[in-house]
Structure formats: structure tokens, C-alpha cells
Image (cartoon, rainbow, N blue to C red):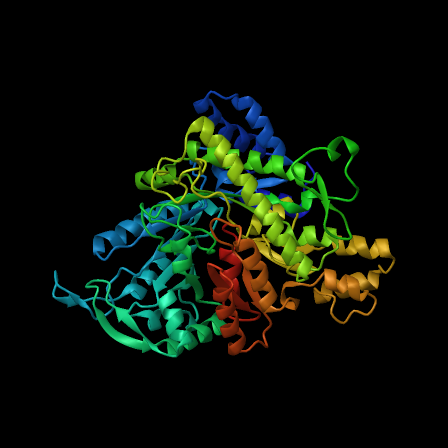
Length: 588
């Protein structure tokens, strides 16, 4: 295998099997064999050749064209056996439910999963507790307890705990929730998001009030000016990166199984809305592997119905035939993973096997654009994002239909949005998700998710392992075009970007724009392009320079809503959240 030094460091730190003394006793090849054989064992349930599929899965992963989410790489073939990255647990308005959910969350976090909670059902602070005659402490107080518990759980030393905490904008304690992270050191194991409704957004547009509802009684207990609450959200996000927004009505309009329940929360990075007790297993295709530098051979030219190689930029072609084949293998891998998964709770197993949600996404998007010669925020890039994601979604659904023909549709298919005359039956209620792929992209040696390149050179920490990352594409191009020098290399490593470096041609500077050089509206446009053809949601950080104003954050929030995104997270460079953000972004 052709693994980079950083990939080997990440694998040694978090993924490869260790003995009781902490010594690594597994090679990367053996890890992929372990995962491939464990997942392919599900094929025997359907009378298929598990050894054949184990070889197919191994080849796909070991060539770094596809990787499943981190818990699958860590736990497949082990006693732990928990393969899902994303969970949502309900928090009901009783002390028993609150602490039962905390116990269940501990089991999930220990197994390597990330957990999302909506605290919107909890009665507000100072509300009556009839059973004791006392008064309630409110959802924020219980979030602090969850945060402390997460600190204690080490997840076997492989992954740090990560949570999403969500509160509806019409909850009476919403202002306390919005402001909580302004005080340093609060909820460091949480990303937090406000569940924003269409009603609230209409009130904001009309400069009017909206109602606050006590979740215990369902009664309206007050009103707030939508503009004042929105300004508080903007201020906190500008200062700390939290909260993000979750557009819950958009999410529930896309809920494939509305008869089973409504979505309340997402996983920690926001890309996976789920019903209470639902889980999802994710995986990502490495797009950089499908760019070819020469035209297709004649043997493929007559292969319908898709172009075998489609030229979309000056730099190369996209190999749609290979991509199509790998999508189908990846969908099969993820569906098999549901059957062999060892679930931390029976309720989660029932929900996941009832809807069989999977989330196939992408990484290496920025690399693909560079190889094609297309700047990240060029109109060609936005057009390609839509076309490519539509292709991936369509092929993933085709694969799900083929599996359903042999294995049956997901059990909750009746009454789902797909249960209509003339529509094919699907094996999976959802098939696509765009995850952040934090550590996975290090292993695959590609850019993360659909993000632009973060910097041309930078350091990052994986647990206690420091990695120095350098963009090989830029330095290869510099040598190829004849403007490379040791002085240039030193300058780029020191700056991390090309701004102000005169030796670099303008066309190259445009091609290698870093995250903070891309305007926020273009970040949002890219997110919206991928969201249009993604079943679940899209993890995307809207980067802003430190000089950005609160008005810039407000504009970004409104634009994301208008563009049909399911949520938004902004991050202004140099704000207090950076440690938390980097940590939680590793929960791919």
C-alpha cells in the first residue's frame, strides 16, 4: 500500500490493533482485511459468496478509493463490533429519561460513535416540578452534566467524546442556550445548534414577535422579538463559532419516513439528521482517485449510458465508469455493515434495521478541482458539484434498488415517501450524506469532505500525535511550471497560502485558494450545490477571516436558509472555539 507518513501516524494512533501494552500488532493491510472480511460476512445471510465480496471491499479500501467512518475501521472484526458513527438519542422531560439517556450516550461514546440530543422537551428553568414541589433547573443545566460525563469517557483512547446539543428557538430558555459558550470553558464537548423554524424565519423577515412555548404544557408563555434573538445568535456565533443553525422544517420536509416520527436532532457535525434512537453508518468516496489525465480508450467509447470519461476542466477527465462501479460496491458495503453491526442498545438496532439508513459521501473534492484545473469558487466548480452529486445520488439509489430486489426493501418502506405507485422499492431510506472526513482524509491523503484546502502547509493534532501537512499538488505544479525554488517553499510553508508571493502566477493562486480566501457566500453556494442532491445533510464550515463583522455572520445565516441548506456552521478565524471545532470535526 502507498500510505503517507501522516497516514501511518494516524493509523498507528487510532486504528490499528494494539496488544495489552499498547504496542501496535496490526498492519494497515491487515486492518483493511479485518474490516473487509467482517463486513462481507453479512453476504452469507443472502446466499452470496462472502470471500468474493471481502476481496472487492478490501481492494476498494486498500486503494484508498473509499473508506467507511472511523468506528467501522476501528471496530469491525473485534468484540466491540460497533460500526456506526452517528446517533441521536431522545431526552424526555423526566429525571429517569435524562439519566437513562446519559447512560446510553456513554455506551455510544465508548464505542466510538458521536451523539446528538435535542433538549427541547425539557421544561424551562423555574418551571414547577409537581412531584417534588420544587422548581426545574432547565435544559442548560443538564447539558453541563452531559458535558462532564463526556470528559470522563475516553472512548478506549481512540476517539474523544463528541456531542451535538440542540434547542428549539421557541423554547423559553433559548437565550441562555444561545449565550452559554460566550463564557470560556463551557460545554467543550458539545457543538450546539439552534433549531430554527420557518415560523421564526418569517417573523424575522417581518420584524415581528414570535411565541415561546413551554414544552411541558404546550402553552404559549411569552413572546420575543425575532430580530433580537437572531442578533444574539449572530453575536455568539461571531464570538465563538457556536451556535450553528439547524433548519428543522426543511429537514422534516425531506424526512423519508414521516410515519415513524419527526427529526429532532443531528449528529455532532450536523450532516446526519436522525429520528430518536436512529443510527447511520457513513462512508466516503475519494474523488481525487477518479481524475484521469488522458482521454478514454476506444474499448470504452461505446459504453452507454454515461460518458466513460467526461472532460470538465483544462486539467483532465472524470472516470465516471469506475466511479459508478465503486459507488455500487460502497453502497453494498454500507448495507452489509448494518447487518453485522453490534448495537449498543436494542432500540437503536430496531430503528436502524427498520430504516436501514446509510450515508455515502465524498472527500477529495478540492483535490479533484485542482486536478481538473478549476478554482474552488468558479461557476464551473458549482456546476460540477451539482452534476457530480446528482450522479452519485442516482447511482447510490440504483444500487439500493438492486439490493432491495434481492434482499427486500427496508422494513419501514410502507408509508414512506418512496411508497408510491410506479416507484421502485429501496433497500435504504437514505443513501447519501456529506461528512467532514477529518482523519479519514489523512489516511486517504486527500482534502477533507467538500472543503477547500485549509492551507498549503499546516500542523494538526490527532490525539497527541502532531502531523505536518503540505499540499503536494502545489509543489508538483510549481516544479512542472518552472517557478519552484527552495525560497518559495520556505515562504509558502511560513504563510500557508500564496497571497503576496510574487513568483506564483495569478492562475495558480486562483487554483490554490485556501479556506479563508474563499468568500463566505461561495462556501454556502458550494454547500447548497451538494445539498440539492444529498438525501441527508452536508457538513461544511463557512470560514470567515478574523476581520469579519457580525453583519457578515447574519448574511451567511440568511443566505444558507434561502439556498435550501439544512443547517449552517460559521467559523471566524481566531475565535475561542478552535480547539473544540478541531476535536469534534474528527468524528467522521
